[in-house]
Structure formats: C-alpha cells, structure tokens
Length: 236
Ligand code: URA
Image 1: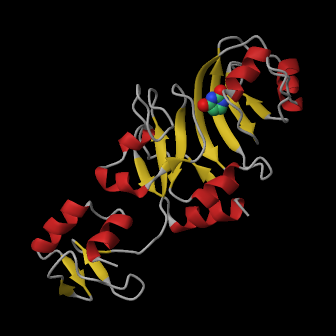
Image 2: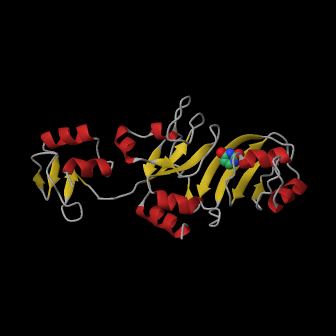
Image 3: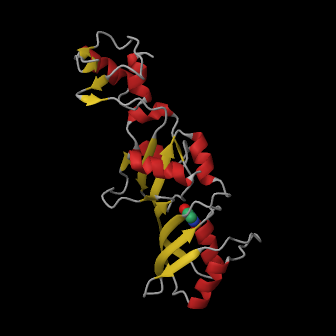
C-alpha cells in the first residue's frame, strides 16, 4: 500500500497534508524519514509515524459525536448541514455514515462509521439494542400514561410499538425513555398518542455507548478500543 494511502485510510491526514508532512521529514517508516508519499509499505509490518505519533492501520472507523440541533443525520442533504460536516476534511473520503438516525431537532449521541456490517447488526430489529433518551414534554405525564407507554402504544398509522421504558422525574414533565426499536419520529409519535408533545429530546446512550460528559455539543472523537469491543459484543 502507498504511504499516502495508509495516511488517508486511517484518517491521519488528507493526501495533501500527507505530501506536505513527507516533504517536511515528519513521516517516518521504521524510524527513517520517508523520501516520498508514494513509497510502498506493508501496513501490517512497517511501523509508520506521522508527526511523532504512531499510525495504527485500521480498516474501519467508529466515531462518537454529540449532535447539535439543526444538523441532519444523513451523508448529504440539499438544504441542511449534515452531521458529517462536523468532522475535519481527513474524514470525508472514508465513506462514513450515521448508524441510525436522529431528527434534525434531536440532540446527542450519534455513532458514525464506515463499517456497514456492524451498523447493520446494531440496527437490526432482532437484536433490540437499547437507546436511551432524555426528554421533556409540554404537559405533565400521569402514571397511567407511563403505564401505557411501557406496555406499547398504537401510533396514528396503526403501528403497535414494542414496550418502551419511561422513568419520570418528580416534575412529571421530564425523564428518560428507553427504546428497543427505532421507528421514524418514534418518541414524538408515542407522545402524540398520549396527546402530549416533546419539547426536548436528547439521546444519551446507544447500546453500551454513553454520551461522554466532556464531549461538547458538536464535538466528536474516535471510539476507544474498549468502546469498540463493547459495541461488537452488543451486535453479536
Ligand atoms: N424519537 C424521535 O421522535 N426522534 C428521534 O430523533 C429519536 C427518537
């Protein structure tokens, strides 16, 4: 594999950043500055360093992002900015996509990946990977309404939702909802079935991943190896 290819597929650098770093002597192959970005290396055996950091060869990428309001969870959109636009250019050529969707006005945890197989398994209705949302509603909820929510509700189109958990705060207008499925606008439509209205919705977990408290709105980071392993376990 060409050296610049390794640097781009690992999201270490864009092709032009890679060429510049090689010219500056900042890319080492087995401890020796590379002469050209076009040299061939063996990604499994050669030790590559970029600006002092070891480059780990990986075929897939997993990014956790704290979605702000106003961004759509799509790879492209003619009208609104997409969550992919929150990432730096070195990620654009990787073919990342959002694993699951959040509405434009929903906030919180999004997983972005280029691993179609894992995403497919995580989103499969058979696996029941849980998603937790912090919510606020317009009108106080009663215990009887929460019981209906937990049993599963019939939506306006006749779809019967699977049982969903709801833990209500003492103010009766906020709390945490846990879903094991992901239908279009599901929580908003479940609240509409109770003649109520969501005023705030934020995903706080997806399977074993929780939204890290230090991840500011709009910020992102690659998953740690432990998080990646836990995700694979959840997708088994
Ligand atoms: N339910 C919704 O209504 N919207 C979301 O974005 C996620 C779950």
